[in-house]
Length: 474
Image (cartoon, rainbow, N blue to C red; front, side, top):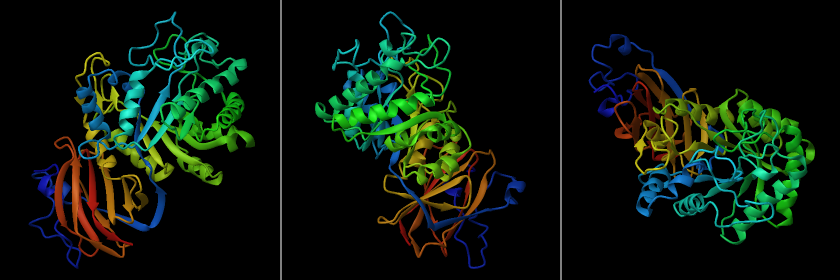
């Protein structure tokens, strides 16, 4: 066996640091070059402690709008796989989309993206709207979701310049200036109704979605609205006041830009009042390189930081795994949220519902198991700690004494690796591994005990491997 299985671990190190040849990791048959491959030494430094994690998550748009209409037993299957901890992903963060509601004259929106708004006409609310996504929110909260955020992709159509929630005809700003207050009131009224009538309290409210992007154009298939930095500087204080007037504890998150660099530019553009009204900085991490600078800006201004959306079309999950590792090492967000758990096809979702929600069958992508390599083991309350390799992250639950290391090998060749845990006062127990590779889906593999606070393994090609040690003390 050359891909995981019983060959993952090397025999415990001797005092001379040699491997027992009979039980060393078997590389591919005849793989002489691999046998000579240098071993990557990784220092896991428990004395370097980073953020205390709040959880992994998903947006409910648009799959919640679809799956919420399925029969209860089918809906439960989806929810258990996404939010269940024993056999699912164990996600604990959910982002609920407050729909703007499209102009009834237009049929631009795709089936799954046609999120109903709560105010079909100015001043008139229909609280029966969006029952399906709301049902998913209610049920996932009963399955362990602890952090919920409301977000908006577009104001209601009658507040827009183009008369459509899909965007402006030229991709420019699409919220009417004289409706800034009306938009803030709409969001605050919805949040208040959730809180006071339905008993659902959003910790944060995000009024924008990729607001400085110029691809939100009239006639698109989803809601979107460009709202520039100057306009954000006006809207955020208005929204903060609207929340205070309703005596709501919900705080403002912003700006939710598409890239790390755009987010940094946006928050740097905020004046003192606007920045003071922002409780949490949200960013997407589709692109951008200034993770450290954004993290430093958040820390300097005493702001919480979330990675609120990322997605890609690679169904193997390796692209996502590398982005998770990069974000956790450089950005260090309190939460990490994938775009949507269920998608209409290809590799964007953990599941592919090939008929865009019109039938209930789904395909489980390899990406699902890769996500589980992170989300099942690094749980809320873990603290990320230092690691000396750019393709590895480590997290520790101090009171439980549990150490979790996730290592990604995106290359086709196996990668020998040596973990040094010398920073711990005590390491006991055995190493348990879980491998997702082309051949395996979260395959559990029991390893040897840790010898002198070290252990060795070989990461299979194109794999994500989680190592768990249950008796660690600082």
